[in-house]
Every structure is written in C-alpha cells, then in structure tokens.
Image (cartoon, rainbow, N blue to C red; front, side, top):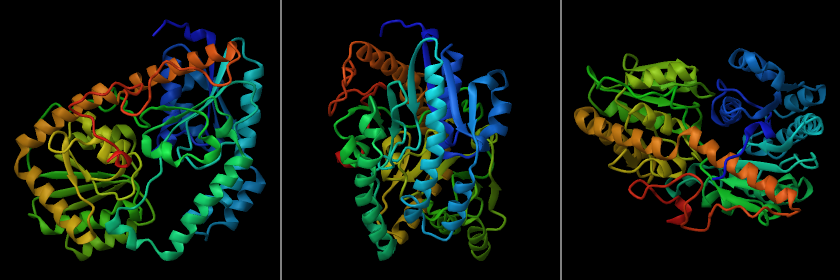
Length: 454
C-alpha cells in the first residue's frame, strides 16, 4: 500500500449516535474518530448533542473537532407519537422521519466542513449498519463512504414460529418499502463505496444501491489496549458471563433455564440492561438462582473487560445477532465463547477451536445444549484456556481495530484518486470477489463461511 500523508485528508464522520456507553453500533464512530486522530488525520465527528457528555470527557483535546446537532421540537413530537408502535413499524415510520430531520442537520454540518476544508475530503457514514435503512448523506460536495453495513438476518427455522404473524407481515412490508425509500432517499445509491460485513449483507442491499462498488470488511473490531488478555487462569467456582441488551432475541431466558440444570457451583454474571431486565430477574428468582446470577446493569467497556477477565467463558445465546462485538471482546481477553450457531457469532467462533457453537434447533434442545456446553467448560478448564488462547490469536490476526482502519483509509485514498481522475466509480485494488481475501487478512485455519455461503 503506497504511503499517504494523513494530514492531507479531512475525514468527516457523520453519525447521529457516537457513544461507547450506548453499546452496539453507536461505538463504531468513536473508534474510527479515535484512531484517525491518533494517526494524524484531519478528522471531524458530527453527531447529536446527546453524545456531548461522554465525548467531551473522552476527547477533551479534540473538542473543536466534534460538532453537535440539536434536538428539534418536531423530532420530540414524532418520538412521543410513535412510542406505542412495534419496533419493526417504527424503523420505517417514526424513526425514519426522525432520521430525516437529524440527517438534514448532519448533512448541512458536513457540507460546511467540506467547504471549509484546506485539503481533500471524504465523508464517512459508519452507522446505521442496517443495509436497508436509507442514507440521507448526498450532495455534500465530497465522496461518501457508507458502512460497514451488517444485516440481512432471519430467525432460525426452529424459532421462526415465535415471531407473530403480524410481525412477519410488518417485516415483509418494511423490506418492500425499503426499496422504495432507498430510491427516493438515494444516499446509498450515490455513495462512492459501500462496505458490507459479509455476503449475507450484500444480498440484503436495496436494489437502488446494488450498482455501487461494494467492499467486504468486517463490521466489528476490538480495541486491544482496552481488552487486554487475562494474566491468570480461572480458579474457584466456574463463572460465566452474558453481555448485551436484555431483549427477547438475545434469549437470556434460555440461558437462565440452562443454568438451573447444571451444578449449583456454576454462576452467571449478566451485564447490560433492557426492557426484559425485571422479567429476567423474576425468572431467576422462580428458578432458585437468586444467589447464582448477578445482574450488573450497564457497565463501561473498562468495567466489562475487568469482569470478563475473571470469568471462564462468555455465553451469547442470541438467535438474531448480525454482528456480536462482545464475542470478539471476550476472545481478545482470552475467554472461550459459547454462542448460537447463527449469524455474526457463527462467523467469529471457530467450533472446538475458539469456543462451542450451539445449534438453534428449538428452545428446548438449545437450552439442553447450552447446559452441556457450560458443564463441559466448567469441568475442563484446561480446554477453556486453550480455546481462549486461540481466540486471542484469531482476534489479533483478523479483528484488530488498527488493521480495520488500515483497510478503510486505503479505500479513502483510492476513492480520491478515482475522484481526481473523474471516475464515477473508483477502481479499488482490493479484490472482494467471492472467495477472495477481503481488506482484512483471513487465515485459513480460522475462516468460517457466513450463513448465506453455506
């Protein structure tokens, strides 16, 4: 890769949410901004004012490079009107309207930063990661990069019956409407490059965006300085952790049922919050797990890393997980992972090498399989240590944030090369054809095909 002077390029990261405490995709813009600034790029972050408190304390030296949009009265009214709607309906109704209002402010701020740039500019929209959600970033006066996107998920067949018929109808309607919305709001159709995390997401792109240049790049990465490996092997009673939002598709209820079936010296730490928190607390009490389960609520990344270093394994029984950054974070710490053989976690975990994958056949069989996997790792700590070591090596090889930013910045400069030459679509020298190596290096002993490739 040719050497480029980072100071010659202004990168404008546009994201409504940019906050590590929010978890999920909101953390992605923060990582990009942090590393780009460390490397000397003229990076700017445009986001909503709700992120001000954390970003001000995290980046005090770059306060003048973070630009906040305000909450408008119309957005507050729309949010109140849609509180009772199902999530799938909100995503293409009230949320879309609120996104349009917020994106208008993001776009205007980004355009002003482009116009004032002393050097060349790329605008990068890392979130939202949904491949079907329209992008409002267009006509900003500079090439736009979107993603990495990650989506195209369905429920496993054994759990599809749990999705209400009304919800299935709404999902079909949302997917149909998304093609229309992306033709009308064609930011993705005009983007210079779309990053996608996997072929599953490529297949889920709206029709209006399928003619753009698509580059495969993993969505998640790990801050290895924060998620350092544990220095001691586990001792005492076997201890497991769940980290994530407490929502229905994470299936923490099955994890509690599994814990109730295994020896009483096995314990569980639940890190995260969500609408099911009280229901899960009540379930734990009914199952007699009051002394074996600790609900920690929301924790910072540093607190989560410390907790994981004291556990035997991470357990993520989600049946609708596009990514699963926590899987990579646990692997970086040196923990084996027990996860569902579906979606993002199945892309990250190598069975019998870095962890154990549980088939999502149905709720009863999955509960039994979770219990069996926990007993196995709880009784054979040498196996868990070996898997944790292999997981750490896999993260170092493929999921380090530094390597991810290497790939992204290479694309930035190639886009600008094509832009200067007047090319409508840049000719990137990264081979992303099927079966080829993506911008992050793959290692054969660890590579696992995504569900859509099976």
